[in-house]
Image 1 (cartoon, rainbow, N blue to C red):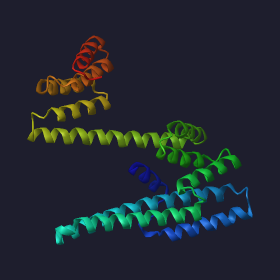
Image 2 (image 1 turned 90 degrees about the horizontal axis):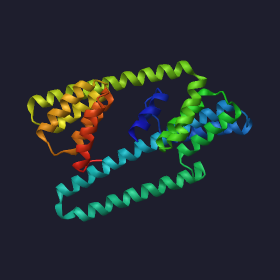
Image 3 (image 1 turned 90 degrees about the vertical axis):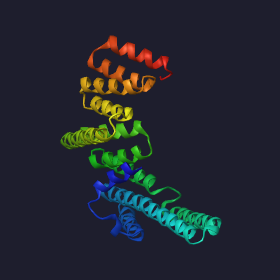
Image 4 (image 1 turned 30 degrees about the vertical axis):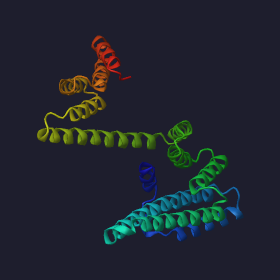
Length: 268
């Protein structure tokens, strides 16, 4: 879910915390009025789709803030009066329930019983019908499909966007690759630092091994999985991971031995 939120924040170079739900609802209404005047205005549908996405993100943020404050209120009440524990729980549950009911009611009025993200999909779909070469509509819709875990539709929209905007796709893939490399480097550095304090931690060696597989440095991956196995010789996952590293490096014989050992230990 957080990835989904951050992805959409990239589409809106503004501080969502400075925008109210009411402001976004007014924005949706303004775009709807433009659509009423011209049902073939693809840009108006696209802009309303973006507004629905902002609304969905704001609802998520507001709910997370509310959940946090509810928990803080409950903890404060328990600290002040331990015997009020049950009362605080009931009060928090009641508030959350009322909030959910209010949100549902507003969504029914504003979105015709659909969530903002579902309405955004509808608008992006209309954009594509009106203008099949509107690249950003495919890209934005693919992000929502990712949120709904519909990988097939997300991939189809991503591919359509990439065909229409090959330079944008290359740039994005390069940024994602660089980000992933930086993440792997951070994992490796963190695990190494932790091992200085705890050199007999098998899980840290396992983390290092998996990071080196991601980095395609299979020799170092095997070395770290081997260190982990020495510390936990009955851990089937470690043999499985080392077997995978062997296979990726081309050492199929060693890989088969490790995978067989993992299976014998109950890891599949």
